[in-house]
Image 1: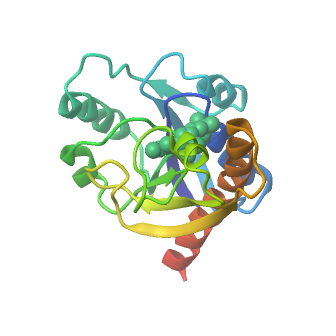
Image 2: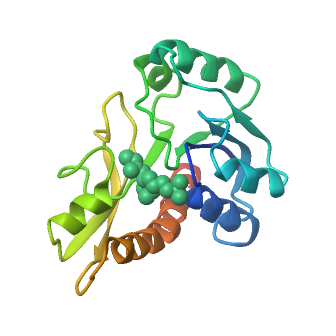
Length: 193
Ligand code: GAR
């Protein structure tokens, strides 16, 4: 039985796009259906891509709303679906306890750094400014903290010889786009075997 996922984004959505491609023609084919792409902003650019692929989209503005009030609206929306995993892909909001408890153990995030060393925004800038020779991409379960949930897996990004922040981002995103789907596949196969 295929697993149903909701992908949450806040912007560009390149990780979401990579996952959708793997669901259509790659390692997630016959394993995963993307039920909905959700954004906390109307202008999240990734929504256009999802719509163009015929995927249901939904946005609810989080602007000015208390965290728990916004999260309850999202929970109410998802009530109409059966969702096995919530995949955060550049979703730039810390989740409240109300949301984490509603989907306990089912929320996954990708962070472009070692979450033991760096949390929050600008992880590639952090790696570049500190002249790191390598950084790590982390896929982890999500709790109420900012990038503090239990680590599922990490993947090294070789940064030797990089000259610009753009190069750091390019090398990192290349890893993210492959790694995230691999881990989603591993989780699902572990669960079903
Ligand atoms: C990605 O690099 C993702 O790992 C990062 O935001 C970017 C979103 O890009 N997430 C975090 O920093 C979470 N703390 P995308 O919208 O193109 O996938």
